[in-house]
Image (tube, rainbow, N blue to C red; front, side, top):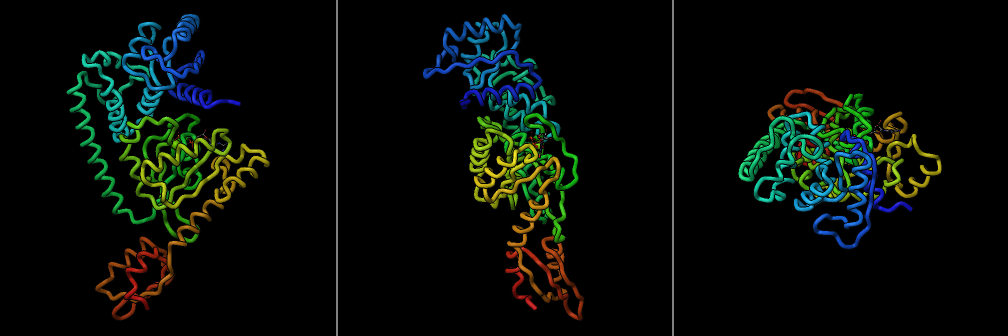
Length: 395
Ligand SMILES: Nc1nc2c(ncn2[C@@H]2O[C@H](COP(=O)(O)OP(=O)(O)OP(=O)(O)O)[C@@H](O)[C@H]2O)c(=O)[nH]1
Ligand SMILES: [Mg+2]
């Protein structure tokens, strides 16, 4: 049986591939006690040095976080650059950050990773020269001393606060319900968005292809408009600086009415991936939201595997975002939830209260509308909460 460490190391390899690093060799050590100076034991260290030399490697990536002293000692001994998993993920984020917002968020995450690791003289920053684990967000050069970093962090937080405020304003003017796609990186969220809405968001067989949230409108079969949002994926051992820095992006998830939890059903690690996603949703305080689990990539499964998954996750909706198979079932499930929270009403609204008509059009589905002498008579399916507020106009 493959252990969790091997799986984690395999994922690290995928992260390295995504970052454009060619992996030459993998090495693993099981130790109960961490060597404070080098993380790994002396014998393993010699083996590693030999591997580096033999293969002409110029980078060593550790799957765990390292202390500044461990970095220094390892680099001196191995005579090559050393980065850890968090730095690698931050590097991929820096490569994939295209908008101003995600660039700000990545820079904030990088600086927050760095700050507690400064040893005082700023020598750790000599590591920031470009290349894996050290890539700046592109827009601004990373600053050189602690005070300047602290100032920059403050400024980035201010700028992100403005971004967040703007988003909130935009969100308020958006009346349609929002369905947010969430899930492990590479589960197929962007593919599903494209299939549901005929959009062309970037899809790639690499980790963290999507960093920014994308919003697309979708008209449900019964006429109601909703918004689907696609955003950054999650991963095991997600550096918590990243979750904290990506608050503005993750707001979309917090504000959503329904979450579509997209799972790669062909992934042997699917159970663990589901656990990781649920843990992040809890951290974001959105676990309680209405959720639909989408078992994606069923085109890759044998019939028996699909049946087993159906037994394990009876409420989940199996689909293939790529081929479009069973997408109608998913659409049906979304409609069902939307309609459950809606009520059909027959109202008579006086002209001087006509503002409500706009709200009804925005939030509901108008079935009949008639203008009479002093009022508007309207029959519509609207959110139950709105129906309660309009009770006094019942016709
Ligand atoms: N076979 C198969 N492949 C799929 C399906 N859905 C997505 N993929 C592939 O899975 C890979 C990842 O898809 P994306 O849509 O980019 O995944 P994502 O969840 O948005 O990933 P990140 O943005 O990186 O978090 C791509 O190579 C897709 O073509 C599916 O239903 N079947
Ligand atoms: Mg994506």
